[in-house]
Image (tube, rainbow, N blue to C red; front, side, top):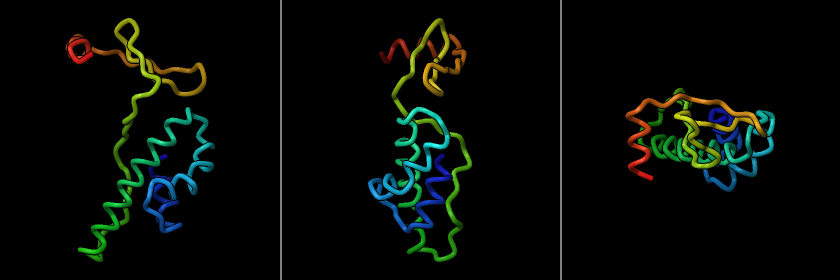
Length: 111
C-alpha cells in the first residue's frame, strides 16, 4: 500500500498528507483491508515523498523512493490474547502472532 501511495504521489506531484489522501484513498480500497491501515500507509508515503523532494534539491540524481521493508506502525485494533498478538486483516478476520515471554513482560511493564 505504501508503494502504491508513493507511485500516486510521484505521478500527481503531491507530498502533503491531505493531497495524497484525496488522490490515493479510493485506490487503496482495492486491498480490502481495514480502512485505518490506509491512513497509516498514506502517512508513511507522505513522509517518504517529503524526504525524497528534500534530497532532490541537494542531489539531482537521487533514486525514486520505494518502501522495501514491511512496516506496520499503527495503534488500532491490536489485542493480546493468550500470549498472541491479534492483528485485524478484514472485518472479523485476524492473524495471530505468538509473542515470547520477554516481549510479554516488556509490554506488561509499559502498560
